[in-house]
Amino acid sequence: MEILEGEILTLDEVAVYLKAGKRTVYRLAQKGEIPAFKLGGTWRIRRSDLDRWIAASIKKKMP
Image (cartoon, rainbow, N blue to C red; front, side, top):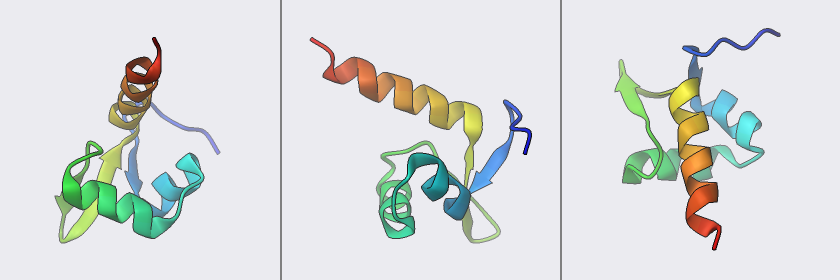
């Protein structure tokens, strides 16, 4: 499966990518803790935004 920079992911896909539970990803999206948006009542996350969020989270934890 080829992954594109501007790819839009569903919560299920994000959960697999992060190796996290779908409920956890849903809660993070609802609280605005991950860069997500709603499309037709379902959450979507742009892959590039998710990667930037991951990188920023790692940098915060580094001394």
